[in-house]
Length: 155
Image 1 (cartoon, one colour):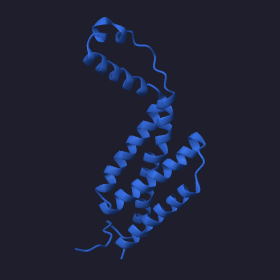
Image 2 (tube, helix red, strand yellow):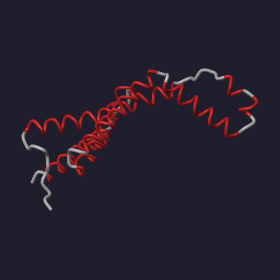
Image 3 (tube, helix red, strand yellow):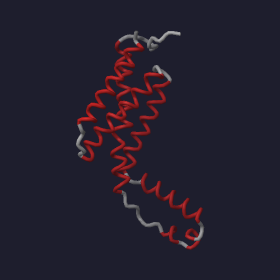
Image 4 (cartoon, rainbow, N blue to C red):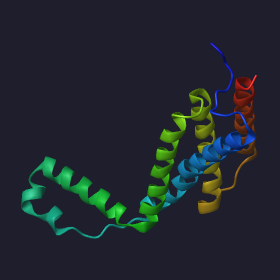
């Protein structure tokens, strides 16, 4: 069993495409998360009279189902929530396509590490959170780990 990186073609063009795809998935998953969180936190749903009706209030099941339905519907109608969510879910589609072509033992750790890095950067951008020294060190170590994973597969 070979531990070499098995790409359709080992030329630089394919490798650059994979790197670009990994980065896109990381951005789609990580950078959108702070936007989704901010939209969910600041969301004020409109009133739904059906939730106050006696038929719904008297049934625990109906009140929970209707409440969940309107909660999801209201969030999806909010573009500040829906647009980042669609981008995030698009990243999942890209990831699904990637795992069918790229080395699985590289795809998963690289995309998840990049998602972490872009989540930190997204928090900084959206909420103006200060990135601590320890977080910078953790980000650098994550990037070094990605480099080691890639290097170990190309030997």
